[in-house]
Each structure stands twice: as C-alpha cells, then as structure tokens.
Image (cartoon, rainbow, N blue to C red; front, side, top):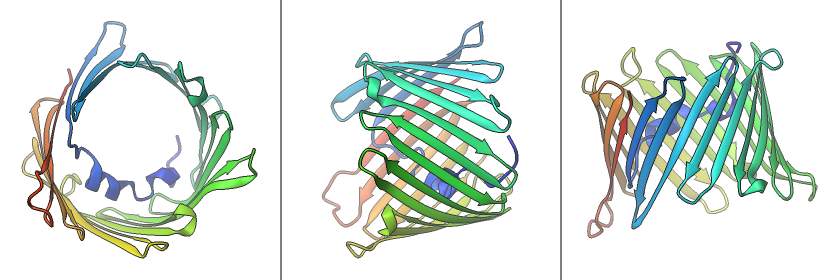
Length: 276
C-alpha cells in the first residue's frame, strides 16, 4: 500500500486509543498459539458482570489473502476474508456471520499517495452504503464520511474531519452526528518511542449544550511497564497499569472511579493476554 494520508477512521484515532484502549471493567483472559501449518489460534474467555462468554478464533495468511474465523459460545460463526492487491493499491474485506445471514458486509479500500477511498456495503435486510474519502499527506489530512440508505433515499450519517500530524504531536477536529457534535483532540509525545504521551480532548453536543473535557496520558515506567490515567469534567477518573510479564504477554489492571459519587464502588477490570 502507498504511503498516503491514511483512512478516515485514523483521524483522531491516536487520542481515542490513549483515552480508551485497554481500559476495561471486565475480566478477560486470552491465550494465543500457532500450529505447524502457520494458523494462529486465539482463545478468549470474558466475564462481564455475572455473565461469562468465550470464543475461539483462527487466523491464517496465504500470500495476499487472510482468513479469520471466530466461533463463540452462542454458536455464532464469524468469518472475515481480506484480499490485498486484487487490483493495484486496493484491499477488499468480506465478512459474514452464521446464522445471522443479514450481518454480511463487503468493503473495498483504495490507497493513493495523496488520497484514500473506502466503500462499504452492509448486506442487511435493507442494504446501507457507507463511503469515506481522505485527501492530503501523512502530515495533514482532510476527510469525510457518509452513509446512505437507498431504500429510504436519505443519509444515515455524515461526518467530516481534519488531522495534523507532526513527529512529536497530533491534532484533530471531527464534526459528526450530522453536524450536531464536534470533537477536538491533541496528543503530545514525550519520548521518541511514543510510549509516553499527554492527551486532551474536548467535545460538544449542540442539541443538548453538553460539553465534555477529558485529559489523560501514558507514562512508560520502563520497557515492560506502562501507566495510563484519564479524568473528565464529569468527575470520571480512570487509571491503568500494564506490564509485560513475559515477552509478548501482557497483564493489564484498570479501574474507574466517579469522584463526584465516592459512595459508589469503583469499577475494576483485569485482562491477561498470553502469546507465544
């Protein structure tokens, strides 16, 4: 794929990952292994509240094709096939689920040095078409997204965004919810490896006049241990500790506390991912 501005979903992604990625209030255990044929098998067990679920996923890559099959405890079988360079500079992703045959989706991504385009057709009972376009460079990008329901003849969504990326920082603005909300974020990296960073995000919902301001950050204690924290103006405080117990295997402990309701118990989560 060419080196271009990236996909529309990448606008604001760095700030979002810093503020949400790996934070959990559940208990999750993941084990990954590889077979002699090169198939990656991942087994996941999740306890959320009083409900326990699990799934087994198999990932296989052959030349320019990737097959991903997942079976969960509800007997759902999800399959995703990714084809690279069927046409030059393109990626095609087809997914479907059994027995929910209406959950199928076909996506085509096109990459250019100064633009990227995606088209997605969701194969529901009433098909919906989503399209995104991004123009620019790896340093500055402008993008837009729209969803259209051909049976009703109206747009289900439209969003626009801009991002500016420098070696030590990244800023973005996204106008979403059909123009009803705006979100601005800024990330500043504190080291060359981009493991330690500070982030700020402000969002406004015009219809309700609601503002949310969140600050957070990540700090690499050493090459094995990472600490993250976040706090918003509504008093929600989150913290996370992630440690690489053995190479590629991560133990993550996270929690969230409502500082305006200290009588409530904090939400705690634990995740352990074991990889070969």
